[in-house]
Length: 281
Image (cartoon, rainbow, N blue to C red; front, side):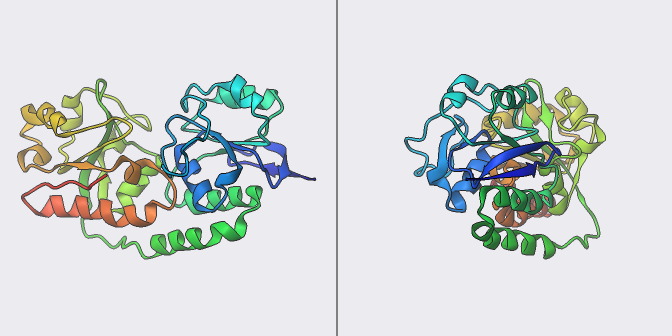
């Protein structure tokens, strides 16, 4: 069996049996992608939040959530690779699994352009470069054809949580996706990658479009009521509060090929038309 020295997106060096045959995924978007490139049979466990591809995941063992994985169960499964993400997972879990002798490959997705680069590197570790190539080429093509020649960016807020209210901020995959879709991501004006503040403070930023995804917080039309006191904000005054797919907005991967179109359509349509509409999750 070949043992290869690899470096993950954080520059961490470790040895991995190549190609890994027993994979534990701690990241929903990476789970989906591993199945997409035909390696589902190698996956021996996933998190409770790994929901796609739904049919293929029936019967796959679950090891709790992304922030509280059952480390002892993971160790007992004897994986030869665990895949994690710097944002999705806790450093302490990565360190504990590494100390137990399990290789953990960590991605660090901060922009849409990070996806083809880091997924390609992970594909090489998985011994699946050829299987991953068509999808990653399609994503690169979508990125190359995105129209950045915009005369005006549309001031937009995309929330991810309430109580406390949290929005997409700087140096995030979702924030980069928004800006590639024609938005001026107002969350960048507040401190933190996912700034939290009273709703009144967010509304002072005067968004023209507000996006409410169905995950990680399950926003619905019931949440529209919270914005009623802020009719001075253009998005509220003009009815441009929009439900959208959380997977499209926040899951790094091949979903970006479609999301670059659908999120852009939501933002531009609602900025220039009187009636809000939602993207079916």
